[in-house]
Length: 124
Image (cartoon, rainbow, N blue to C red):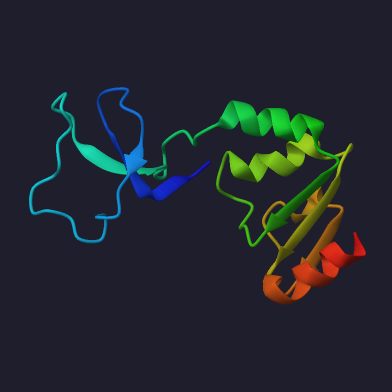
């Protein structure tokens, strides 16, 4: 959904994303693709449409369990995923504080995810 930090892609053509570990040492001038477009990280910035939304919606349609970890419950479209499954799937939130959409979860566990998740999944 958010992409991969150690991959890059062209901002102009359909060139497939490629492995790129030079992201933390960028050249002074932006790298260019063979088509002339600029090479950018293969990630989704705020305001851009996330990757693979069709696949995500298909998976949500088949879900019987939905677990969100550490989300604010505000950033769309991910904040709406729990609403997509509410009423037919068990919905669980784990994080340090209640998300804005806490009322849509059937269960909320507040605290450190590293401590809560192992016990939660053992119980499931």
